[in-house]
Structure formats: C-alpha cells, structure tokens
Image (cartoon, rainbow, N blue to C red):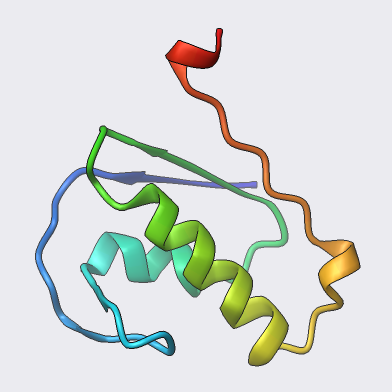
Length: 78
C-alpha cells in the first residue's frame, strides 16, 4: 500500500480532467500501487484526487469500474 500525504496546493500542469493538480495530488492520481491511502488536511483537494484517480484508472488504464472501491471518512461521520 502506498500512503501519500497532501499538504500543499501549488499547481503544476493540467491532468486528464482539465483540473490543475499540485505535485502531491499528481503523485496520488498517477500512483502505480494497487492500494492507495490519501491523508490530507481539509480543503487540500482529496475529492479532486479521488475523482481524477478513478477517471485515470478507468479511462487510461482500462480498469473495470466494478473492480474499484472508494471509501472516505470524516470525523463528522464518526
């Protein structure tokens, strides 16, 4: 499992969904590990990373959407 901590917002280039990602977000979206945990502060772009990662997996790597699970958790949900 790969753990990526997103802690800065600084745009580098556009990704496949035409949303600018910083280098930490890009690392999470294009990670080659099969399992990925993203830990980040509020407002750092976690939802953007999740949306773009699923889009990348399905449209660029041809992963079957039925084989993808996304789980999110917030303290408010606890």
